[in-house]
Amino acid sequence: MKRTISLPTIDHETIRLAEPEWCTGHTDHTPCHRVDLAHTGTEHRLAFGDADLLVAMLAQDPYATDPERRRTGLYVEQTGWAASLDPDGVRRLAATLTVHAMHLRQLADQLASLGDEEAGQ
Image 1 (cartoon, one colour):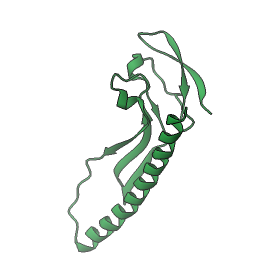
Image 2 (cartoon, helix red, strand yellow; image 1 turned 90 degrees about the horizontal axis):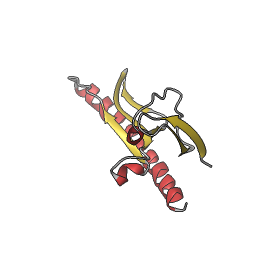
Image 3 (spheres, one colour; image 1 turned 45 degrees about the vertical axis):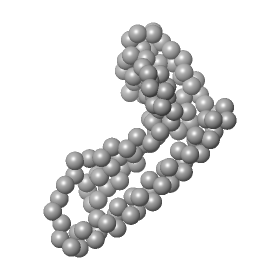
């Protein structure tokens, strides 16, 4: 069940909108333009050793001008990590990337399930 929240904006005063269950909330919200409002889910940090390689999270921009961005998607950000590795390091990185690929597939399944739920509403 979605919650209804109220958020102040620069251009539309305070607006009420539905907040998806997966959204982590808006406790750090700073008033912005309505088109810039976004729901974000839990950050999934996909790391190699102490370094983040990717960050992924569910995201939705309910007032985006692009209708595709109004739908829930998986926001994926690639970091600027780089390193020279020896053969064992390359193998460890490859194994890590395999695990991360499995995690991304699970997030894709979750996203597909959410898409089915959104289509049914």
